[in-house]
Image (cartoon, rainbow, N blue to C red; front, side, top):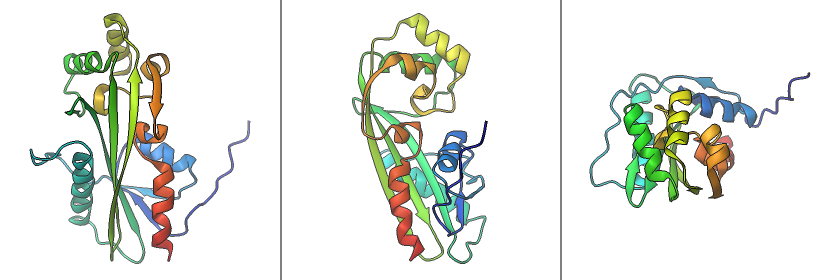
Length: 201
């Protein structure tokens, strides 16, 4: 079986300041050539007044600041930082602290609609651009056994809202989405592709 062709979509040097395997794979599939480097953020704490899309936008900027405190950008290199949160009825669901919290998060999402917000920050030596994406997700009613089975098999402790849409729980439990599927995975690739065009000029 042959590997899919590589389509280099940008000539400018790109750095993904994230260890997220989902974001790395999305960028690769979209033809981006980039290097990967940890942003270096150890404490992702937001001001309490922030809510909804303001939170991932703030955290994406925080990650960019952390990266710049440890690295000097040269030439036209662009650093990509991002953060994703899940919101239900105004409450923000980040990454669960453990098994019990993951189960409770999924119970709260069961038979409900929730929003997924991703904030992205593009930083170069001369400019910074923040943008965001919103998607809506509807879960059918999930049984306790289904939730526990998923959490114990997939350990979704690194995922906002305690689930990955591309994993078993998304395949069998999600009835409908509005907006970008890839935003829910963790990076709105279609917007990123367009936003980076301004850095080529």
